[in-house]
Amino acid sequence: SESFKRVAYQAVMVERESLMRQNDDLLGEIARLNGAINERDADAKRMGDAIGALEETVTSLRWAVGEARLHARTNVEASDVVRLAARKEYELLRSEAERLARAAHDKGLGASRLPSE
Image (cartoon, rainbow, N blue to C red; front, side, top):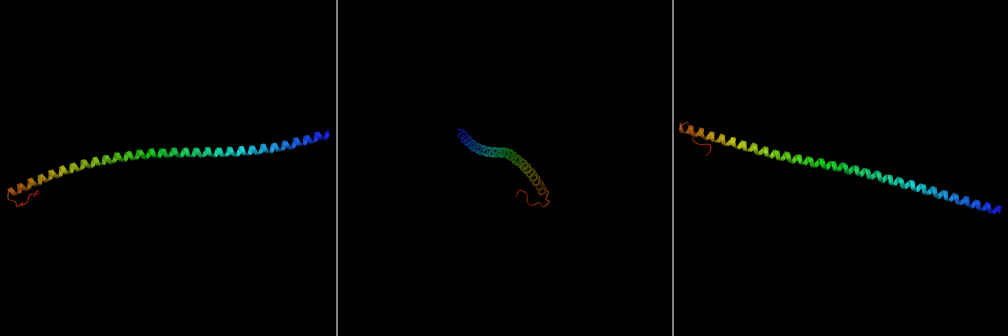
């Protein structure tokens, strides 16, 4: 009876040690999985931050393109205004030159050719 108790006690202790080793192994595996989950969470956060930065960049680029288009439109309009003013000034100067040439021709000052010819 006493030896049976001792053998049973030793069997229980061996089983206990085996269960404690399995428990330690499981705790190690849980810690490893938690580390992997934390790494994935950190990766997901970094990717989220990168996506947010890209969205800000896209927004900035869209704004810059819009501004560039506005400036281009404004520049074209300004060029049209300058071109029209230059054309009017040219026509005014040309008609004045023709008037002066006719007057000189009429007075016999030797202007043999009008600017419009």
